[in-house]
Every structure is written in C-alpha cells, then in structure tokens.
Image (tube, rainbow, N blue to C red; front, side, top):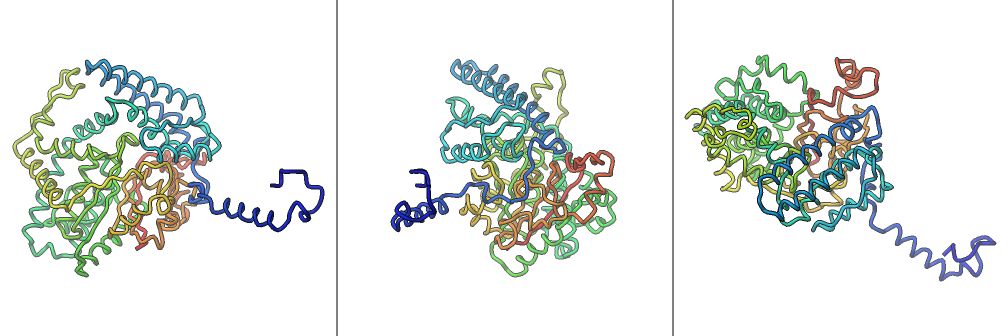
Length: 512
C-alpha cells in the first residue's frame, strides 16, 4: 500500500482513510499469524556451523563427508557388478553420477540445491524451504546439523526416484560386516544374557535385593552406553550371583571415570517407583542410534528391562531411511535376528573380503550356537507377545532439532508421553535434543532441551559418547580441565576432547 505513491505528508489524509487503515491492520495480522519459519522454534543460542575452523563441524564437512560419499559410490558400483538387469545397471550408474556430483558440490563449496520431490512432498518442501530461509548457503557456510541431515536426505532421493533401487541401503553391507566383526563380543554377551535371564526366571531371593538390581541396571546401561566400542571389560559380573562385587570392579571404575555426568541412579528410581506403585503398563522407549553390535546391546538392555519387570513394554524407534551411515532401520532389526537365528550359517560363511584374502572363519561351537539361538528365541517371543515392538516415524529424519518436535510432530510427542522413560541413544540424538548449539558447558541439560525439557511431559534420558562440540551440564571449570588433557584442544579454542568418543554423558531430564 505504501508503495502506491510517494508519501509527501505525514501518515494521514486521503491516502490513509479509515478503510485503508483497516486493510493495513488485516494485512499486518495476516503476516503475524502466517505459518512461522521452522527455525523460529530453535534455540536463540548460536548453532554449530561448518565455517567455524575450531569446530568438529568444519572437520566433518571437509574430511568425513567426502569419504562417506566415496564409500557410497563404491558400494553402488559393487551392487551394479552383481546384477545382469540392464535397466537396474543403468539406474545404478545414474545414482553413482549423482553421488559423484554431490561429493563435488561438498568439496568445492557449492550452494545447497533444492531437492526433487521423491514421493514425500511435505518432507522435501520443508528441506527446500529451510535452504531458502538460510539464504541458499554453501556447504562450508551452513549450520552443521541441518546440512548433515540434508546430505543424507538428498542421497535418499537418488534411490527413491528409481524403479529398482528404492529399498536399497547403501550402508547395509557395512552395518552387517561390523556386527560380524564383533563376533567375540556377540558370543560373550549372549552367554551372559542367557545366564541373567535364567536367574531372573528362577526368581531367586537375591532378585529382590534392590541394591543388586540397581547395580545391575547401571551395568547393563553402561554396556549400552559404550556399545559401539564393543568393550567387554564391563561384562565381568553380568549376573546377580556376583553383582555385589561390581562396586570393586576395576574395569567398572575405570570406565566410570570417563562418564562426566551419570544420571543412571535417578533413572532407575523412575522405573523402580512405577513398578512399586503397581502401574500396569511400564513403558520404556529407545530412540535408536547405530545398527550392528550396538543394536544387539540395545536389545540386551530391552530384554533385561522386561525380564526384571522394570518395564512391561519396550518400544524401539528406528529411522525410516539410510541415515548417518550406521543408524538402525527396521531391516537391520530383521537382519540381526536372522543372523543369530542361524549363527553357524552367518558367522561361518566367508565375506567377500575373506574370499579375496583366502581366509576361512573360525567354526562356531555348539555352546555358542545354543546361546545365540536362546537369545533369538527370547527376542522373537517378546516381539510376538507385543512386549518388544518397533515403531518407525519419518520425523526422526527431519532436518531440524527436537526443539521443533512439539510443533512439527505433535502426535509423536503425545506418543512419547506414554512412556515412563524415553532413552535417546547416541551423539546425533544429543545434538538434536540440544539444538546443536554453542551452549556454555555449565548450562543445565534440561534448559538446553528447551520445549523437550521442563514441562514437556517426557522423561528424557540421553546416553551419549561425545563426538561433537556441544556439551552441557558440566561443572564449572571441567571443560577447561579437559581441554588441557592430551589431545583435548589446548589453547586452540577447539573442544577436541569431545570429538572422538573417549568421554560420555548420561543425562536425565524429568519433564514428566
């Protein structure tokens, strides 16, 4: 309205009669009440960006992502070589070309381009809108969390827009190979888990020992925390019979020194009290992270919670598309169960690499096979009885932080409120919970969760080995102390101690 003609006088007179002012008011209201930008729900604390030379974001976009894309290209090439279908080969070659172009864009700091609708128009529109709202940024000058999600979502469009590759997981081979490589740990944990479940079933008097149960709770959760490190030093006393010795376990104390925040005791109280109150359904949700051995350990945790009565149902929440290389898909759950249902066939079959190297896998002993089949039958029964269920949701692969979840996915929020405890596994979930922002490290965890914290109706427990810059809830001076350790970052300004998974945090927000 103001641009209709130049203003030569104050804002009154014929140009601004009463009807015009009413129209102006209506237009202003329309602008104010329009759908807000998704970013408006984010924390106002500055986010981690790829242009910050002192951040792990900078290292990721310059070093890690090109390597990941190269691996994806190699995987598709291998798959192409195994098919005689001419149409599938042609589609595969196009995917390779698209992956190569994406790698070039990342390495040469090109702008993030709009994605093509792959059958999920709302998702694609949200990503494209955010690219636009960010000012069409380039790869080396963009919020880290969004750009990393964008990369994996865009990769998925390459496959979704084909006939023969729609359900192909470029990371599946890598995930199952890491599980196979964890063979010794898989066998050992199967044996311990079998002993534990049988003891719980026997209902010995010691199972009513609260201190023993509390220690065992911490033991299993800490194995789950360090699961991707396949560190079996924690497994020394995974039975009630010897659980009292855990307090003196050197391995346990050594591992606990690297847990900077440990809210497991308070988490145990939540589930213990729900059971003591006679609550009919006691539900624990696991927002999953990595497949392979880590998923195996997550299932051990789920089995323990159900066998002990600390939970009556465990809901597993996987991703719905190949994501951040190793994240769990429903198909990974199936692949894992298939592997342990017939352990001799799985572990004794040569991999492609073993065939090339002329290596023969060690045979699986009868006891090892029996232990794993027991584990398979346990989990299959729990799944069949509805105690162990998988509930995917496409929101887990959205581009923003969980600060947006109450606005963007209210039905998912309501579903999460039905759990007594929601466990978020891994570094990415921690980054999403905290907005991947430059919080002061002394900021309380609950505050950094924003709308997912106080008053959210959700008890959030984050199990995270640190592999990114954002860390909250630390005592004053701890960050500075850790920076002074070997490789911790020193005077560079970089928080390098938090980049490589040596340190961990177990943080609880009681929002329910």
